[in-house]
Each structure stands twice: as structure tokens, then as C-alpha cells.
Length: 203
Image (cartoon, rainbow, N blue to C red; front, side, top):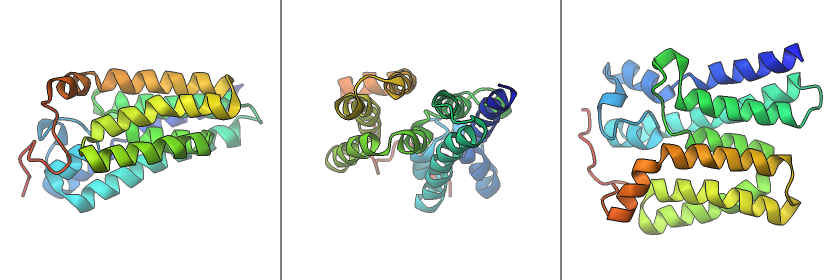
């Protein structure tokens, strides 16, 4: 029990390491949350700092999600729920990081890591459709929402309603909440597309 609590707490603290904030500070001496869309994530890093830093942020955020699930597996004594709770905790940490005044990102990259580690094939199927939607529409937010909405659907199809379904549904609700302003902009046709000049590039 104590090890499980430690695992969940460690996952939250890991999630709280906002790589977009850290990398932007290291490279340009800026708080990325004050530039572009104001979001501490890979898409805004792309907008503000460019491709290389964005790929690095995306990779590190995905690895956070993977690492949290494995922390849960190592310390969870075979429990299904501990890795799942660690996955939820790392996403909460990313969204509301204790190190950065609880102002984080939207958690999609870490969500990818978590979902791919917990239920790979449903996440893969949803991910393929999400990537195609981004390619054709250039709306990253739409692709992100498609990913989190379809993963529970593919989980039900492949495994039925079990513990992981409820975990995926909770993660989906987190993502939808964090993207609520994006949803409004998508409906209004005002959402920034991938590669658009939605924010000033920091030189």
C-alpha cells in the first residue's frame, strides 16, 4: 500500500516537470506560457521556438507518461489499478504542475504515453485516425480530441467495459476540459492550424 502511494505521488511529481517551460527557459530565457497560445506544450513550443525544441518536448512528455505507468507496474505488486492511477497522476501533474504554480499544458503527449503503455492497440488505432485528421485538417487540437474520444471506443470493442475503460474515460474528460477553449474556436472556425502564425516566433 505504501509503495503504491509512493508510486502515484512520484508520478505526479514527474508529470509536474514541464519540459516546454524548462526548455524555453534554457534556450531563450522566456516563460513559454507568456508567448504564442500560452500553453505549456509541444504545439506551442513549435509555434514559439521551432521544430527541434518541439520534437524534444513532445518526446519527453510522451516518455513521462510511459515512465509513470512503469513506475506503477514496478511498485504496484501486480495491481491493475496502480499503473492506471500513476498514469492519471502524471497527466494531472502535467496539467497542474506543482513546480510551476499549477499552470501547465493540456496533457496530450503524456496521455499518449500513458494510453500506449496501458492499452497499446486501442491507442494505436485511435492514434492513426487522429494523425490522419491532423494531416488533412492541420488542427492539432481536433486530432488530440479524436484520439482521446476514440480510445475508449476501441477499448470497448476489443476488451469490453473493464477497469481500463474507466481510466480512459477519465483521461478523456481531462483532455476535453483542457481543450474547452479550443473546442469553442473549432466551432467558430477560429482555431489556429498547424504551421499558422498564431503566435510570434521568439528568435
